[in-house]
Amino acid sequence: MKGQQEALSAVLISGILIGVVGSVYFWGIPLIQKNKDVSLLENSEAFMQTLDSKIKAVANNGGRDQIVISVPGLVRFDGEIVEFSIETEGTIYATDAEILLGRSSVLESEIINGETVYHGTWGVDDPVLFKVKSSKLSQNKYKTDYTLDYVELRNAKTMSDFKITPTGQGTSGGLDKTIVIESQGDSATQSDGRTLINSNVKISII
Image 1 (tube, helix red, strand yellow):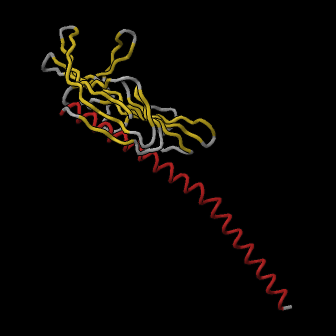
Image 2: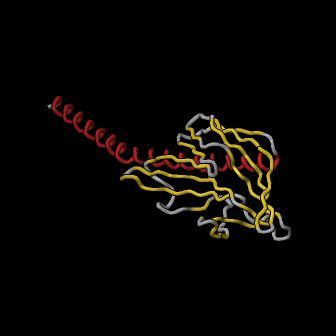
Image 3: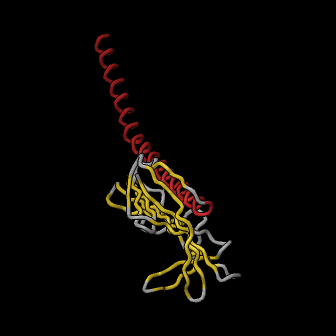
């Protein structure tokens, strides 16, 4: 009788342990993955903010700087816009909506040669549109794209306008690759009686 009770107790304890472990797995694993995704996306946003700060510093002060890609995504540069893409099982952003981050503001726009061109005010607006867009690829898969798009800033008090102009051939790279940022000096173009001063910054990934 005593042996039967001990055996029954062992079975009950085993059942309880299996139930506890199963509950922890059922609720814990998704929570761990969610926290991992939140951390990845926050780190991705911070990485792009740091990259933007370095580009601005080189544009304003000259010289050369670099940053190592520290997040497991892909950086692409098409000769004008810098984009970082990462895939996760969840997202912290509204899906299928382009969201402005940082100090980016809704700038004025005009159509030039069939394309929408944005511009801001010198001394007021940030020289970059820092945007993010999350898209749902499947039930538990999202792709999030961060972009740095530098825009023209117009000075109402003078006939000169300013723009950070990324240059270089299209390139891409992932985790642990190095983004090199190098000043190429200033250049000026004339249009409608105004002078646009471009602070040229070469972007390359090695």
